[in-house]
Amino acid sequence: MFRDNLITLRKLHNISQEELAERVGISRQTLSKYETGESIPDIEKTKAIADVFGVSLDDLVNYDSAENKGLKIPPKGKHMFGSVKVGDKGQIVIPARARKIFDIQPGDNLIVLGDEGQGIAIIKEKGLMELLNMAREGKDK
Image 1 (cartoon, rainbow, N blue to C red):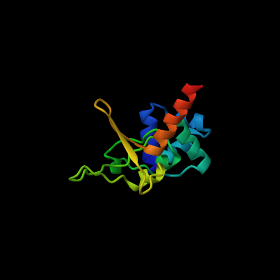
Image 2: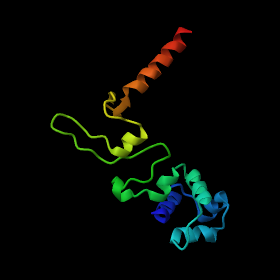
Image 3: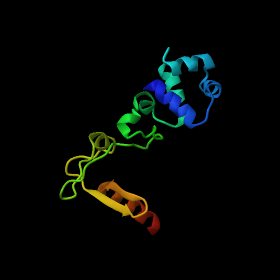
Image 4: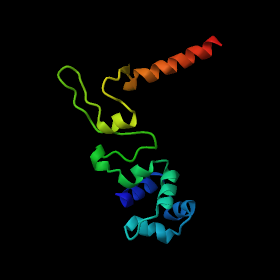
């Protein structure tokens, strides 16, 4: 996966092997070996490559576009959790990885927002209330 992700990101960002190698501090030949799978970078070089492309280290190493409907690696902080099926009563199951990243626990209240042009967003009620209180306090000053 790493080598495929490296090639995909380099081509997507229209960066030559030579330019990427220079930005990471390696030779073009070393980068070529990463792309052919002959060798793999150490953790520091892998992190430097992820930083050049603005993706997470985990996504650079583990992202599988086949598991994500063919979508390319998202920018750092953006996530594709897969698809969910809407039940008979409109219920959905939030994927475990999303619950972990956003610390969604059983019993949490979630607010569903919608924009007909953009889609649906889900936010924790607690987070929204904290944001609104901060805005209110700033306005009162």
